[in-house]
Picture 1 (tube, one colour):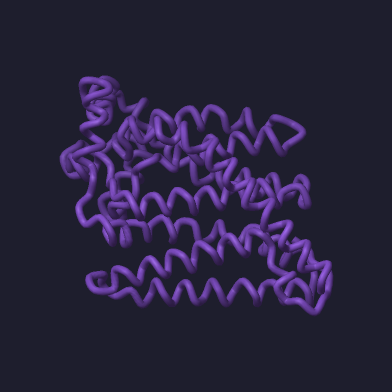
Picture 2: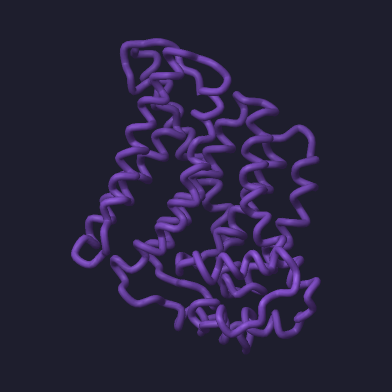
Length: 303
């Protein structure tokens, strides 16, 4: 967000800057509680230092050398860090609660449905084409996130600040829950990754390769895939004059809801929790944005 020159440097910080700095500092403090048993926390602290250094530097550069590229980076840079923060939840999830809680969440699924949907869904639909469709839906989440944020920004830059904040801050809220409630999901709890046959089609093969070689148990409750897919759909309707973006993304959003359970990334109860938390996080993020914007405006007036 562009700012007018002033003596108060804090007036340069956008709500997105403040929200990101808040998460970085809060999660850094949380890391300190695990120093006695976490292995090599230094990269995590150094990354936080780098991000906290980047924020004022980028704010200064926007003030000193205002141009479209710097403005673009200033309003979308958290998207670069989201994957890192997500992977980090696997590192931090057992700081307070040392044992994963999957036994309880799989038990909730058993009580609700009378069976384990995450295990039975793939057995009921073992066809290779359906497996590939589920993998495509699941991986589309990452492209949808970037596409919606960039499309909203390019369509109406000044009107994009709030929806982008809602999306990014909702990610942070899900990550906080992942750190506090360690649930790794069916694929790790039931140890299905190494026992299932390799999918016959390219996206499924690629996804299995990533899971076997790079995936670490992170957070599963609630499903951030489903929650953010719903939030992305909401901002696509709320902040776009045309509904093209919403309708293009809708089949993938629906597919994500099924894919998370089919691919055993989540319990069915995780999806239900996402349906509840998504509107709550939209409300919280919007409220926080308005408060931070008011604070930012007050600083500008006093600068």
